Image 1 (cartoon, rainbow, N blue to C red):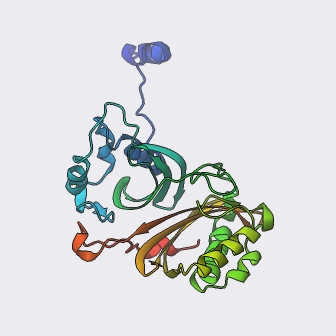
Image 2 (tube, rainbow, N blue to C red):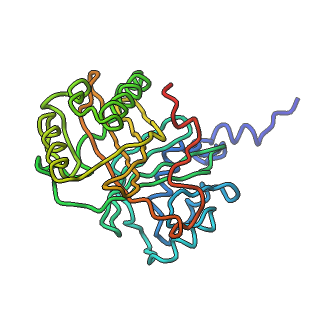
Length: 289
């Protein structure tokens, strides 16, 4: 049998000549979501290929649904060759969901984005904006602090803990029970109006009540987490105004050790650009395991 000289040549020179080429590895959903968000608002739209052309559902009430709705929404903002649209600080995955926590440069805001993937493409999106403020009484900004994902084996346990705390303390109003869940005076707070520690938290809630400020958490719509980070999405109201609450918690040694959040008014129906609702998450967004 004659030797295949081409195969031999390729084998001998593969490393140098690139004869034996391989396809680049598939990006993770987290990497795809990061590319999409990093390039929104720029002239580079190549990453938009990771958004489904046919089944993209938009929950941002300022944009029409579908991929074309997103493209039309982006036209109102000036495009730049290299976008500084977002500065992603935290990113984590939970099943087919990706959560990104960012500074939004062109809007001077902080934002949480949630992307749902199917077959490697983004098919659904939710977000929540809040204007940037000065550092809080303890000197923390709305996005600084811990970023490292740890304790992957405790994801389900941490999601259950945080969900229980939000239901007990924020939804049911049992503020004094906060000490059961929070790491005492070590608790780090990034909310603009509260300082660190459980004592400051309780005083802050009392001061708000004394001023007549009312905050109601009516329903939890999503609990998403990876390791020590858990995001809870809730609906409710602030002083009667319908509000979307995004609360991100870092859990350490069985207690909530750090907290970031974002509050956004939900526009009245006549101002909404789509009928998908601010929430309407699939049931999978509430699974703890």
